[in-house]
Length: 117
Image 1: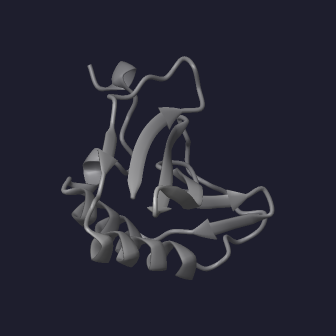
Image 2 (image 1 turned 180 degrees about the horizontal axis):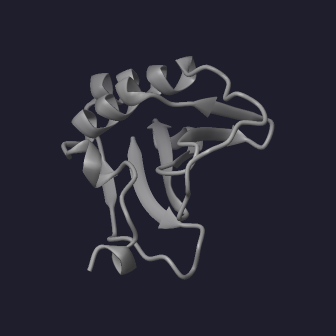
Image 3 (image 1 turned 30 degrees about the horizontal axis):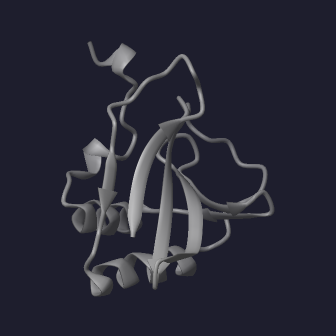
């Protein structure tokens, strides 16, 4: 499993983050949690989003078997495709942070560098 940070807003910058998890059982728990997320509600109002995104990729035998985009702010959805967006919750973010070996505040609703100075 590989988790990398990027921004969808060129004016907002975040600290680099690129983490791989080689433990198959840990990666499987996150994979299963991602697959089990419920569909995101349609036409909902979301908090402010500053473009914080992650690419979450699961590999098996040197090939990507699932790749999704995870919003770290705004609606905080996992995006499989434009038609398939899933709602996250604190349990999901806690599992992800624990698996990556970081505090949830280091990956979830992290402010851009420009706002943390």
